[in-house]
Length: 212
Image (cartoon, rainbow, N blue to C red; front, side, top):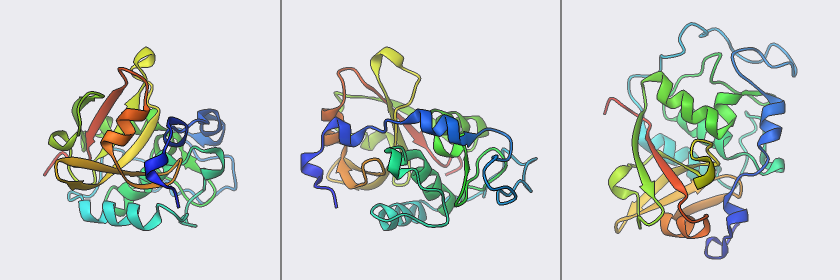
């Protein structure tokens, strides 16, 4: 397990996005072992369950933070599993797979496994909402987020290239706590994460359920 009090930015950041680009797809079945990606919902890109179970998202994240779910491809060896992990939690909470957003134990789509692509996908469905920009100087994104929501961040010189995906798994005493892969970490305070990033880093909070 990771000692969260000794985290560095190298621990928090997810680095190898080239691996994602070379091993993920958008809108077509992967060339990796064929026939395993379900494209039966290819005409339902904007459809998901009408109810998102936030507790299920949190339960999944806390259960699998230190272990890999063998039903999914594992990107942890490249230090780039954060978005793959967040998508798994969303699926556990009620979001529906389709040809654009899907994964199994051998392959995944880019919108499932790449921070930028997931960010765009969530907003593009209309089933999630852009909650707010959370400045680094903000001690906690508590007022912008709820349990199960996602938090992305990007560097000031490239505002719209998301670098990392995290899940809100605890809110206590006006502090939001984040769980994520790459590097696998459970309930890291937002104040710790924000203290490890570059000055003027942008944080983006995503409400995963636009209907509640």
